[in-house]
View 1: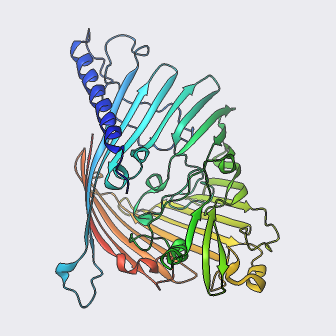
View 2: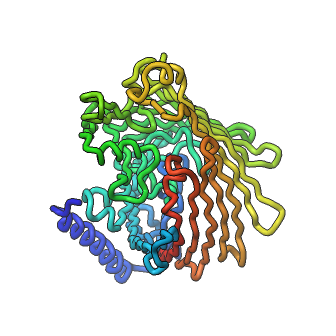
Length: 479
């Protein structure tokens, strides 16, 4: 971890926030006239979704006075303070229960929104242990400017954009890299890494929207390593073991024109049928790891680089047989169409199908969703390239299919929210199960308790976390 130059940056952010709060208090104390009652709106729930499909969402006006307030821009401040403690329950038989590992995760989120007549600026700052003591820009979870015109708007900055109709699972959500650290214990927006982005949202007809995106460079996914973190994902275990064995691991420079990408998405709705078409000159979901052999007994180096791909996607949603149905399909076309180049990833397809339904008991809602990934032309991998092929799998398994089932309820006027989810991986029969209940203690304070259990062999996606089953308690104060 690097600590140099962090304190001045953090102090600047805190001073900026303090000055904004002071100016807000000062103006509200000396404004002429009466308030019109429109203040204190707080932040929209879909702050992090910069899809451009909800351009009219607005926030409360801290400096609202009588008369026309549209000419007076307003700075809105909101956020939350979160404290969670995690108790890891898989204690070795030789250990005592008192030796149970415990982790705590304090976090402060600060959300800023500055709205003008034809433009607005939004920022989401996160102060936590893993962000404040890494790169200083990690504190900026998202920050972008939006400018409105008659038929379109323009967005630019560090953004997180959600594409696709899937709920828990995605296939065409392709723009932002993913942070795999603590992957299964974060929601969708928390897992995303904001990207520098220029985005145009053009409205077509009554319901149509055309989104054009340019990203000047693409960051690598982030993940814990097997040596210093509990949550090294299954897909990176080989890489972690190579590093532990002394292999030199190097990453291709991603701040070049090579790592830029462009994408477009068209969505529309007709007679209750929502659909979308996507194309991206982008990258495979995970970068390519090329191994170079030395002396025939090990690997001297592992070179990692983003794998260029043309991505074609479809998405759809419709109520079928009283089920809120959704689907996504993506085709990742690399330059190795035949699948016979061991240094380039083969083409891949990915899909999502699912539905949710409100049940006639209490306020139960049932969601079932499945995601599949399949590597094409895999016979070439099996036949000739062994472990030198970047798509090699020692079990000759070139598909991955998972299904998630989630049942949730709402009790006592939505102040008690129980939920049970079960995620199962078909190929290796490993799974994750999670019961959870959130209690709304006051309108701005909630308490959440959950238990997460992992099961499977150690070389499976969920079984890799066999020792990570945990009980967690979390308090959240929103302001």
